[in-house]
Length: 399
Ligand SMILES: Cc1cc2nc3c(=O)[nH]c(=O)nc-3n(C[C@H](O)[C@H](O)[C@H](O)COP(=O)(O)O)c2cc1C
Image (cartoon, rainbow, N blue to C red; front, side, top):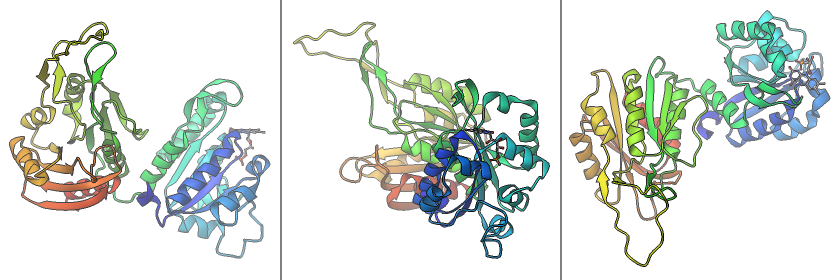
């Protein structure tokens, strides 16, 4: 996330919602990621949270009034709206959405929204009846039509005790949406990216399985990078500890056969296919229906090969589709990856060193190489998976 926020200026508009406390975490996280954060609170927000809290967290004076002491300084609504890389309104009340939709500027934040030059991202939070009210829905539709961005709201239990849509989306989801809004390189707009991610669990019996150590971090990094560059993204994910971006369409599977089926269900609509999952090469031929009882005898499991998903995808690809594979190797990493690239007729392969100290599996970084069908090869020693994801799309798009 860091590289999306570093050296960016975010104007965080905070309005009078009960979810206002989550603005504190948003400010902390964005600063942690290297962003400069300026907060503007509406009068109602000031009733619900002390401006001093956000002042301390952001390290900047908080704007609370139109005609306050900042008027003649650079921190005016015009300068701020002009200089921000992103205006994020979180939480956004029904009231601020109505004002923004109708061009009303009766306080600092609503006026700054009128003067905005940067992307504007709203994270609404309100009672479910307020959210589903035709007026609010019409305001949201008109703001979207004008290019404003939205994240959430999420469904769930609201502070008023009711259930339904209206909850402020989770902080990580808001940060992902902010990262997408901040990213200016939009070279994947109009393209659909299909990614496989995570591990496979192959059943031994009703309780046990054969698995692997894939965390799903690489798949998640690729999905976020593609979303930030403007693609629509779907992920066929095996079991993985790492969360996927909320804006990705996710199909959860367990086994390689399920992954195979889900990939081929979606393949037709994709422009770029990336096989980042650690697909199980073998499965137990006949998993036991019940739980196998312990005995002192050796237990023999007969394993049969699973389909080679990426090889099948590449063999049947449309001329416009591009196929990227991953190879995890303990030795002769580059050579074996090159052989796999050629044998499976891929457009690109990302080779990862596994085993030993620099093992890529499960870690945030590792030694990697990007090899292309055109014969290019580039080494990325101890590269972060999030950075590697950027290089994958840079090389693919020739940028
Ligand atoms: C405790 C409390 C919680 C509130 N929570 C919300 C909310 O989550 N969403 C909302 O749209 N309005 C909420 N309101 C109502 C707004 O604060 C009210 O509409 C106000 O005029 C919004 O002003 P602002 O948009 O300038 O911040 C709440 C009011 C109170 C007293």
